[in-house]
Figure 1 (tube, helix red, strand yellow):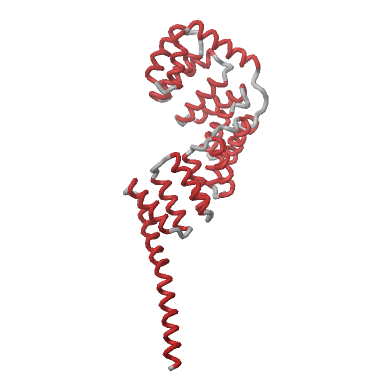
Figure 2 (cartoon, rainbow, N blue to C red; figure 1 turned 30 degrees about the vertical axis):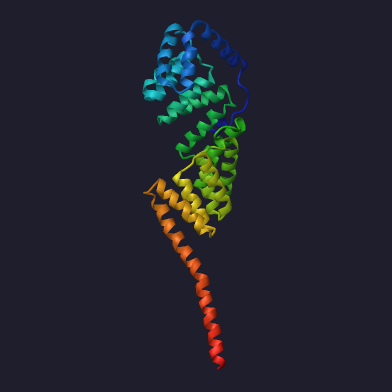
Length: 306
């Protein structure tokens, strides 16, 4: 796939959009089971969806949407092998559907069939250049091929097409992988504007802030993660590390002890807890040590004058 395909711009042909609307109306008219199957799929009730879509295909064998949704259900239940024929039947009936080509490409990419996935994602983008998810998965495909620069361009294009998609998260991952802390911070922050509950983005942003020495910022992110995921051992460990590096040893010990209580096998938390306790003891010993020196100095002067 070349850069011209990757960076294609334009509008999806109106005839495809009109055909999709007409097809949806016709399906509902001839196949009452289709809507039940679609709704069950979107609700995650795959077995129920499978039964309804089997009926939908029988009721309207000339329509593509029942085949497409049956393929999507089959992917969830058994993987691409059981879905491939239905994807191909759907595309044969819906050749101008970016949705059908995208979903087939997505399934092929998940199965590791990169060449076939590139074909289907390219076709989806030819039909609908502003399809943000197709551009995002194109980025995943290019990354799997080792083309990091191409993947970055695809992810950036996906954020322009769909600012609420997952592109910023992927850009943050790429920046983090190459040691670009500033780029990672910016991308993860944008991803969290889109989806504040995203665990991975929040934890990665916290880790980057901690690595940069921004202990207050890191603690803030770990606390936010714990609000969404109470009792998470990794977030508690990170919070403990942030407190420890800021010299707030009592709080560090509390957070790290909680982390170990949740995950007793967390060796990193155990080591951090030992370190925080040692540094706390040393810190508490400083006034005693300094006081001893001062007392000794004072006594030395007193007795020295005699």
